[in-house]
Length: 162
Image 1 (tube, rainbow, N blue to C red):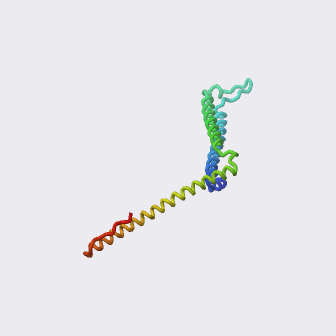
Image 2: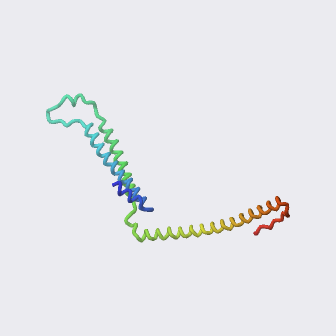
Image 3: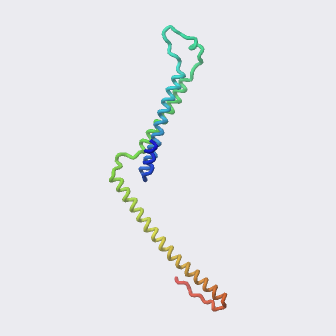
């Protein structure tokens, strides 16, 4: 079972989410089985011994009252809550309607969004390059001005391009 989990988790997108949900579902079903086993064991341990006709033992008379009803309610609540969790997890799994056509349409939409984001990124990079050129030009003008000032030459600067 762990190897199946690893192979499912390596896939992308909805498959990964489904694998996570399947793992949660498997854990919930295992928990439900544990609760059933524990409930049967505790109820069996706390149950009063069955009477066999006229034979009565001294153990029955000396035994204090058992909280069997409390245990029954506790385990019933735990089992009901876990069963509800299992139902919720089952409902969250992708339906059979998730066909290849629907997946292809979703993939096309994601590709369109990717192309739009790439176009926006290219525009931002282009504007960044223009700004970088202006900054480099201004730094070059400042450096030339400082060199002229130190060498005692005329300190004329060329106006920046707008």
